[in-house]
Image (cartoon, rainbow, N blue to C red; front, side, top):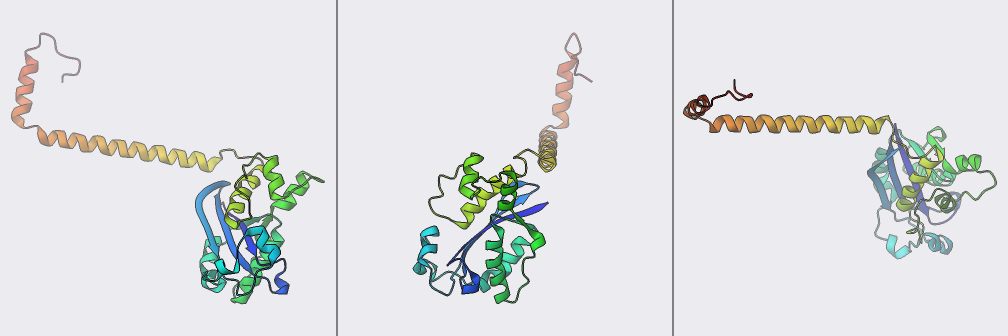
Length: 229
């Protein structure tokens, strides 16, 4: 099972008011295990940044000026998420912004049935408690000390850890066992190939005369060695 933990940064709070996405960060999970496969991109929003938004993520108009526009990376983004479930915190915010960007370039929207909202899960598990990403990191002892500013990829990585705790904790699953078994089998195959290669090299080094001399030497033993045939 493949899932994508996703976060965005934006120029403001509302796509209906013309605000745009300025960063996308994604982390891949396979069978609830994070992989090293990620997607991250900064975007030129083609509009000015709100001061409040800039205080949150620190991205400036000048920094984003030479970054690609969403239409230039849309195909790569769509390919990365594929048909996977999307995991996001307060998911409606991110998905509304992304769907707004997708519609602008005539691409299909992300459907609601593909989205899992970790904020909803947290509110069900901890009603009345603070359930921001920072609060959940603190509750689950997830190290967020590097989160001085919001960042889409960093927040996705933190959310991936939080999500796994929300659904029951990070425990090895069948996929890990299968992967470990496959690695052991490959190690055994590599070992067998090395032994075969070594034996062939030894066979090539020994001549018939060497074998006869060795056998004659063994015949001088009073007792036959156990390994002698």
